[in-house]
Amino acid sequence: MSAPVLARRLDLVVVGAGPAGLAAADAAAGVGRQVLVLDQAPRPGGQIWRHRPGDVLPVEARTLLDRVRPPRVAVACGASVVDAPGPGQLIVDFGGRLAAVETGAVVLATGATERLLPFPGWTLPGVVGVGGMQALLKAGLPVAGSRIVIAGSGPLPWPVAAALHHEGAVVEEILEQADALAVARFALSLIGRPATLARALRYRAATLGIPYRTGGWVVRAEGTDRVTHAVLRVGGRERRIACDWLATAAGLVPRTELAQLLGCTVHEERIVVDQRQATTVRGVWAAGECTGVAGDRAARVEGTIAGLAAMGVERIPGALFRRRDRERRFGELLAQRFAPRRELRERVTAETILCRCEDVRAGAIDPAWSARQAKLWTRVGMGACQGAVCGLACRTLYGWDTAVPRPPLGQPPLGSWARALGEATPPSATPPSPAPPIP
Ligand SMILES: Cc1cc2nc3c(=O)[nH]c(=O)nc-3n(C[C@H](O)[C@H](O)[C@H](O)COP(=O)(O)OP(=O)(O)OC[C@H]3O[C@@H](n4cnc5c(N)ncnc54)[C@H](O)[C@@H]3O)c2cc1C
Image (cartoon, rainbow, N blue to C red; front, side, top):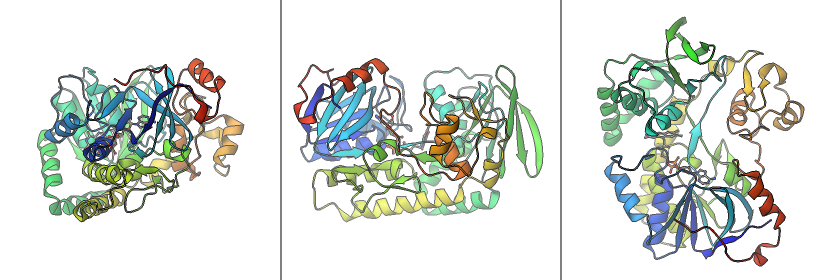
């Protein structure tokens, strides 16, 4: 399989322009290498620094974004890696035009996504992920006066509630699925992390007055054309709250599809890496939340290590490893304290839609099947999103294995995908340009 070659033998291609990818690119450029950063989002920054032109960003974001830009580093946004047909070869969808990129090394910094678990009514318009709500807000959704219930887990609901409140939304409640003891133990652990504690206190101060409850979850969303009420269970009692938006998720989970396509080992939902962030595949390193959810500080230090290691730097300062290990321990703590509770997996009824692309209901699925059997017999996960949502949900609900995705990832236009397949020639014989310019 081939496509026009955009760039031959770059030293490093970084997939993902979040904190991890930017730090990796910065480190590799710092030792004089030719680096290309690809990100499917319209602008670099990843999830935490998602922004529109003119938005004020924190200083650490501005510093990295200033360093990772042309001519020091080539950055292509709106560029989705959809396939990895051979060693050092990536097929990239540049807004509908496919091109091959050839590179000596790859750093995967593909981040995390939300774990959306089905419950009755979850497909109603107005029911979104917690990070999804934040993404809508950052894209300019007007929320002033809207009543919003946030039912999530871990630290993410806090910045989202603070931002919504700041924009004039009425945040009715922040509901944490973990119980009070787990949250208290997590809060105590922040004493040893003054910067994180300060951030947490800032968010708490910005959301004073918004009720925060632990050990609770959404039972169902009600409405006909869109959500009008959320039914919550807290402390053994059900409450029904009127709302315009229900933002809910069971935490974050690493994005590993591209790593799987490349043949990297994934264990417990994370890309497996060694001390120097190398994956199990030669020439491929990984950093940030795709290797385990631990926050932006972990992502940055892992990115730096990965960028240096991928460029063959032998003497990486020990302080970086120590900081990385400290941040990783924080990630383990997050995973323990905010693990999705059993009740979140018990909300589906036979009528609950699992796969909204193919309209497959839970009653059609036998949990004893494998993911593959379920696909063949019900088409679950075979729709437009290719299981991006329901694949993860079924994994959590039924304990199915992480299925290895098939190319193409995402939804490149079928025409250009077919053209790329039609031009099939061995990678070494791929014609040079024409190719879209790297912005
Ligand atoms: C929806 C959401 C919102 C979040 N909001 C916050 C927040 O407000 N505050 C906070 O502290 N933490 C937030 N987090 C956690 C946050 O992701 C991390 O702390 C930090 O951003 C992780 O950095 P990263 O570089 O590992 O990944 P990310 O920042 O997630 O960056 C990964 C990048 O990889 C790109 N990518 C993935 N696959 C491909 C592909 N195939 N081709 C091209 N590009 C690809 C994505 O577009 C993304 O920009 C959020 C997480 C999520 C999922």
